[in-house]
Amino acid sequence: MDGAQIDTVVLEENGLSLTLPDGTPAYFNAYWLRDNCPTSFDAETRERVFDIFHHASVPRPASARIDGDALVVDWSGEEHVSRYPLAMLALYAGGAPRPDPADLPRRLWYADHYPAITRVSHPLLLDSADERRRWMEALLVEGIAIVTDMPDSDEGLTRTAELIGTIRPSFFGAYFDVRTHIKPTNLAYTSKALEMHTDVPSEELAPGIQFLHCRANSVEGGQNLFLDGAAVAEDLRLRDPEAFRLLCETEVPYYKEHDGIDMRARQRVIELDRNGAVSGVTISQHMADIFDLPQRVLDSYYPAFVTFGRMLQEDKYLMRFTLRATECIVFDNHRIVHGRAAYSATSGERYLRGTYTDRGELRGLYRGLVGEGRFK
Ligand SMILES: [Fe+2]
Image (cartoon, rainbow, N blue to C red; front, side):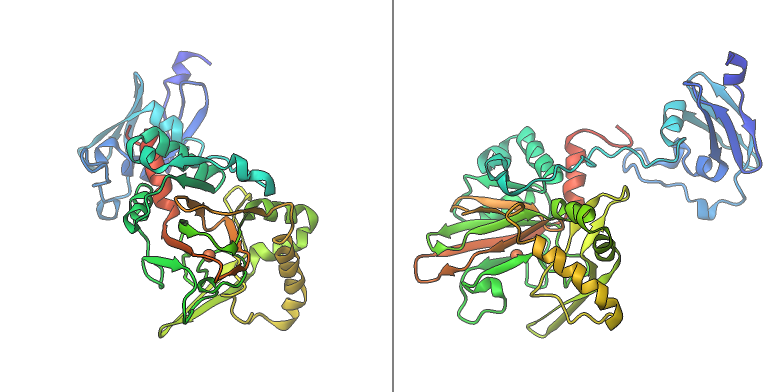
């Protein structure tokens, strides 16, 4: 291709076409160009200050040309010239989502993951951005990490959680205390076994990141059980594709009545990302409402649901260990499924204090930390 063609910009009915410096032909819509003129963005806030809803006419280039490493557009009907770096145009030419540094590939894990769990020390996290980045990466890639050397205080948990987000209350409040309660409102507050679950699916947007700070654990029993729901769901896809499809597509009801509140939400058991990979699961026997689907749909849904529920009990997936006082386990509540073996309430003390933050804020802080961004 010769230089004359590379420099040619062709005006079309709704936009213009040109050849990018790497030889790729590209087309850009005129609305998109006008809306995203670099002058549309405030230098300080980086927010768009140009308002296309108030633009007087349909944006139309009067003329356009390549000038060095930029496309220059003269707009008809207004005194405005736009100058777009060709590197910016190359980024958007293909119509693919903007590269996201927080979109790290998930690494699925199984029962033997415990020795390999990422461990980070609380004092180091406070001091070191590198250590916080390592922690965040573990949460994005594996969905789980343990913070060690936690202070034995309520404030210790708050400080840890606030490193990766804002405390995000559920309808139980901002924090919860998992120990035997005299009048329990939740199975977690008894010494009984707690079936494998994700937390609070009765909320429309269930909490994203969960923190369980172990303050005391000297009881007999009460082993912690964790598994990677994405690993189980990906295996279900291979073992029983029809069951997998039903769990991806069907919304089932969850509920919780608690202190005068009647929380209800519908969730899919398996959640897929835009590439079709499993990004999460939602499961909770104790918050599942009576399934109100047509009974004939349940003829196929229930076997699928039970197949998945049984897989959540398989030794292949279940990581069993005992969380120690001074440790705080942090995990993605939309991916990691957790439970607890029964324990003897009179054999000692068991106290976990918990809270939540959200996944979006974790990803946002991670992007900030690795120095990516549209304007950097
Ligand atoms: Fe839980």
